[in-house]
Image (cartoon, rainbow, N blue to C red):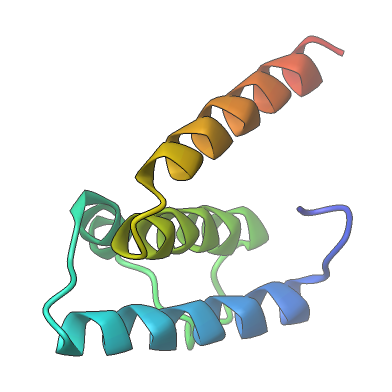
Length: 92
């Protein structure tokens, strides 16, 4: 994700996903990924935060949105794939 987007684009994406989360919460759709996002203590308006912090927030929001949409299996597969990718990148 970091190679494709600059910080400005990541902050914008963070803001859009944050609004989706808030909309879901208005309808009573909450889950542990949204809780994990909240525990990060970062918001899209905190533009001074590090790029990787916004990336982690985006990941948690995406996972929460997928789960809220009933795509829990796909969310878990995505999580596993991203972990494998992170491990592969760390070894090179």
